[in-house]
Every structure is written in C-alpha cells, then in structure tokens.
Amino acid sequence: MLVIRRVRKIVSWKMISQVNHLFVSPITEKGSTLISPQNFQSLNIRCFRSSHNVKVSVPELTTQTPVFPAVSKITRVARTDGQAALFDYLHCTRGFNYMDAEHISKNSPHFLQSLLSKIDNDQDVTRALTRFFRYYPINEFEPFLESVGLKPSEVTSMLPRDLMFLSDDHVLLDNYHVLCYYGIPRTKLGKIYRDATEIFGYEDGVLDMKLKAYEKLGLSRSTVIKLVTSSPTLLLGEMNSELLQVLEKLKILGFENDWMGGYLSNRHSYSWGRMLNTLHFLNEIGYSDEKIATLFKMNPAFLFEGSGKRIYVLVGQLLKLGLKMNDVYSLFCQNPNILSLKCAKNLWHALYFLLEIGLEIDNISNIVSAHIQLLGSHSLKGPKTVLRGFKGDKCRLCQTVKDDPLNLFRLASKSKFNVDQMTSQSPGKLFEKTTFLLRLGYLENTDEMAKALKQFRGRGDQLQERFDCLVNAGLDCNVVINMIKRAPTTLNQSKNVIEKKIDLLKTYLGYPVESIVSFPSYLCYDVDRVHRRFSMYAWLKQKGAAKPTLSVSTLLACSDTRFVKYFVDIHPEGPAMWESLKSSLQSAN
Image 1: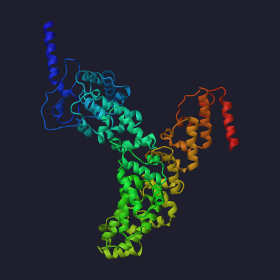
Image 2: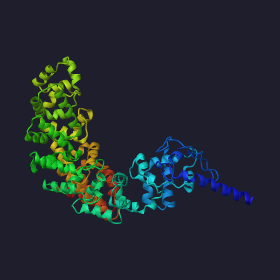
Image 3: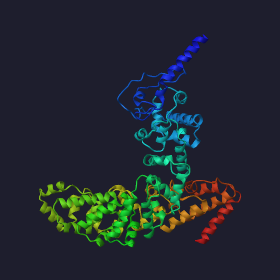
Image 4: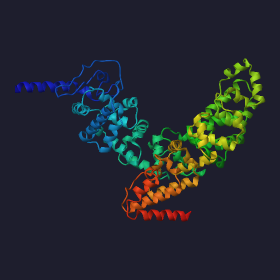
C-alpha cells in the first residue's frame, strides 16, 4: 500500500511538472519564453476538488493569439470573492504590501475574469482560486500593468519576456512607489509606463529629484502631477527646455506658473514646442503681450486645446479671407469660444459652403466679420442639399445670401433655431452666456441648453469669473465643469460670496477645497447658515464631543431641528453656545 501511494505521488508530480509551464498566466505576450498563448487557449480548468483531481484539456496548437479569453457574465459575488482570493495571494503568499495588493486585486478586472472563467460556476471561488495559485503561480506583471490603467491589448505588448514576479524587478517597484507617494493616482501611471517606460528603470533617488526640480520652478505639487501624467516624457533626460520657455513667456504675460495647472488634463498630451511656437507666432503677426494675455485670460483653450495648433489654422484662414490683423484680434476677443472644437468645425463647414456656391471672397469676409458667432454655433447643411431648392442655380443662392446674410442660416441651418430672435438679443448678454455654456460642453439648440440659459444667472463674463474663482481655488477645470452641471446654481453666487464660503471651509473646518467636489451644493447655502454650523462644529471638536472629519453635507444638509439634536444638545454647554453664535451673527448683520 505504501509503495502504491509513493508511485501515485511520483506520477502526480510528474504530470504537474509536464503541464506546469502552461499555467503561467491567462495573458501573455506572443512568443514569450514563459508560455505560449496558443497553448493556453485550449486550457480549461473545470474544478479543483482535490490535489489529485485537476482537470485539464490537452493543449492543441492553434494559429490564434487571444489576449483575453471570451468570458461569460460573472456575478458580483464571484467577482468579490475572486478579488479577495487574488488579494490574499499577493499580500499573504507573495508578500506585497497591503496597498499594492488591494489596488491590483481591485483594478485588474479583465485579468480576474480570465481566472474566473476557468472555474465551474458551482465551485467555491475562493477555495478554487487558492488551490490554483498554489500550483500555478501567475505572471504578476499582467494584473499589475492592468491596474495602472493600461488596456488589455497594451498589457500584452508590454510584458517583460524574461520576468514573471514583480519582486524580480525591485527597481520598477521602487520607482512605482515614488510616483504613488508623490500623489500621482495609481490608475494614471499606465500612461507614464507606456510613454516613458525608462522612468521605471531609474536608480534610487533620481525620479524623486526630477519631480522636485519642477517644484523648484515655482509649480505646486498638483500642477507637477498634471504635467507628468499628461506629458510623461518631461521626466526623461534633462529638464524640458521648451516647457521652461513656455513658463517664462507666461510669466512675462503676467501669469503665475501655477495658472496652467487649472487647465491641464491628464486625458490629453501637450506639445510644449508647439505652444512656444504659438506664443511667438502671435507676437510675429502683430499681437502685443497685453493682447495675448487678454486672449488667454478670456479663453485658455487658445493655448491648451491642441497645444495652440488651431490658432495657426484659424488665423491663417481669416487672413486669407482678407481680414486685417486687428480685425482678427477683435473677433477673438468678442468670440473667445471660436477655437472650441465644435465651433471651429462649424466655421470650417460654413466657409466651405460659401466657397462651394461661388460667393466672392470679399462677401465671405464681410459675413465672417459680422456673424462669426452664428457661423461657429450653427451646423449647416451641405451646399448640394440647399441648392436643390434653387434647382442648382448657384448664382441665385449667392444673390440671396448677399441680399441678407442671415438667409444663409434660415436656408442652411440644421437646427430650427430662430435666427431673428437670436440677433435681437444683446450680444453682451445672450451671446456671452451661450458662449460660456458651449465651453462647458452644452450642445447648441438643445433642451439642455435652453434649460441652462434659464438656470445660470448673470452675464457670460460674470459666470466665467465665478468659474475661474473655483479653478484658482485649486480645483481642476474638468472637476469644476462636472460640479456646476450637477448644481448649476453654484455659479449664481457672486465671486465674493464663493471666496468667502471657501474661506469658511478652510478656516473653521480645516478642510481642503476638494471636499466640496462631492457636495457642490455647499456653495448654494446661505452664508449665515454655513457660519453658524461650522462655528458650532468647530467648538464641539475643541470640546472633544464630535468626530473630527464629518462631511460638509452632514453638517449643512440636515434641518435646523436635526442639527440642534445632534450637534447642539449633545454637550451641556451646547445650547448656550448655539444661542451665542446666533446672537453674534445677528448683531454683525
């Protein structure tokens, strides 16, 4: 009997050794020396009932190279159990620190699905995966690279050929932790890894030194984070000289170094050389520094959207139409949204339409000068469609447009917008507000736009000033857009009131401005209400009678009765303090 058990054990381990090389991981690079993806496709782990009952199909060679196997829908419970099993493997078995293991296990859904697809639906996920990990260690680079934000197809192409365990590349992990501890979101590190992989091979201290070098330029940490996540190559080689020149030029124009931080987005990449050329180009065509500063203050998109590329194209096109440089400058100042993607596209289509029907350049120039706002905010039908109503007679259509340029919009506009009503409004009122809303992402001539025009109170320049106030307070431009779309009345407060409420947040609670992102309605509450409740809560914290970090919504959203019950009556001296605060505020008013 003993001999039979020993023989069975030898045979079992021999079988495992023969197939073990096939179970490196669900995803791998084609041609990898660790595992053939063709072989892995045919594997089907059905269950793990015992150490002697591992069901595997015989691998067959195929010409296909799947990145991730097709998987059926996985239940939330199975996914949660799978994440827990992966976390336990990484943290307890492989020795990853808690934060790394948790992030990888919760942010590699495709990798996890490929693991779960190997298990029978009626099996205990935790036990099955635990047994799987025991015999078939995974290629840890796969869930790691997915967890930092790389797509499955990108993961496959970026897997190291000769490594399987992350601990084998301690230099990569060290630099990964430098970026994490600096404050860069882990899910944004994938772009850095993809565009500047060399960063993860820096010797100890090099990466930290490069990050701090940008701070020495006068940039805040949040701005540096946006810079390196949008343009990872800034961390390669010497400090980017073109960026330094852009910062220097902006300083001459009167902008602080951190000004650009409010308009950078890690979803885009930036060409600092093109930005620098744009700044020089504007000088060369006659713009003074004061005029350039005015343009950028009114609409930073001139510089940051496309890194200034649209300025070249649009200015060149307008100059070809015969407009003078001063006219172009006036058009930009009066219509700062004209460089937005949608407006620029509409303008190009309108110019194409007018050229296609044979309208003279002088007439086109006059129409652009007088109606550039309408040209940018309206999509036009194609010239062939409009010409059908004129039986193909281009001359008659041109004459109709010459007689009244607004006929262009009456005949060709795709929308049913009332052009007469639009032009009867004061350009300084409706146009400016519409311009501001278009910049926020609202679509022209929609119910959403009509509703927004009623909700937002104030001129366009006033709304922009309030918007800039939030950005200058330290919030990301895109975050502010999402906030005010959720709570439009946020911008109905004056700039002074917004600044005062942000100051109350910092002074009484010590909270950063980011704490209102999840509760933008905070800015809509009465100043006295905010002052009273924040003062009461600050007093309670001093007495040790309240939790130290309650959310802003908890303090403000409840009724007065509920607030008194939970934040006043809980301390013997609370009612007296509450009355004192109300009296002091009333006397101050």
